[in-house]
Image 1 (cartoon, rainbow, N blue to C red):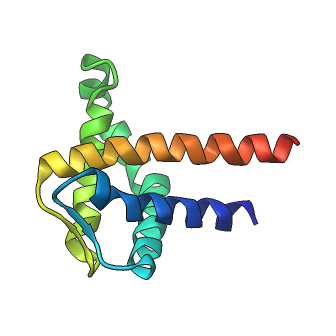
Image 2: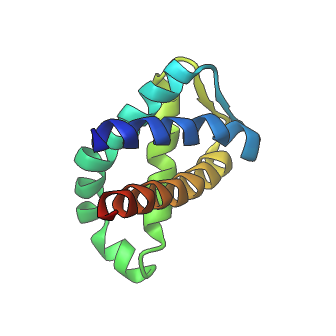
Length: 116
């Protein structure tokens, strides 16, 4: 149940991205659900591999390269999900920052909900 709640809340966050960041477009809630699914899948499967491959660069930048990786992953999702468009690297970078904050807030809300 917690996984479904997280998926829906992240989809809502993806729906808000075009309001916050020009250059990102989400056509429908269904598209947002698909993007949220792929965002979770990419963060679980591909991102750890990339972090390991780019570990020296990530250490050199004190972890800031992780934001660049997130932006590239979001931009990549935008290239193959129909109805989700990212106009370039800057909107992808800002979108990844917003989604990192949204993911933190979703985890915080669901964690506090479980404790009550």
